[in-house]
Image 1 (tube, rainbow, N blue to C red):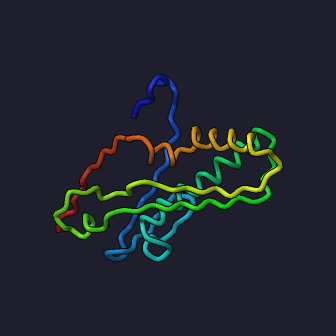
Image 2 (image 1 turned 90 degrees about the vertical axis):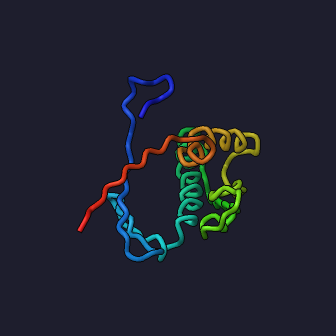
Image 3 (image 1 turned 45 degrees about the vertical axis):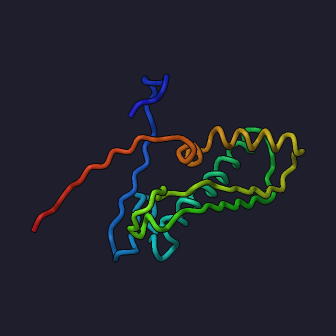
Length: 147
């Protein structure tokens, strides 16, 4: 992995391991916790939830940095996709979400202008939204255990 103009910077790495339970369920081990996709929501729900959670986490960090007290924060993320691709139909469509609508309802001790700047900083610093918005290289390696 490389960074654009920070090739001498050591990158932080996150790793999860998924173990198949059934065709629609997988236990995900983060090294710190585990959860089951398929029981605790679909993979698509987890992506949307990761986006919302990252907005919360990043927004909280920015608020701390800027001495903003957040009293409440709710993030709603909605996205549509064409399920025909997933179902194997021969269609000319993307398998992924077509776009995201995000609503952030915040109560804080800051005026609207400051909160708009806060939101811009969240968008700049949130790793999940940055990965959704920009193309990120994916390298997939197949490891086969034969019987």
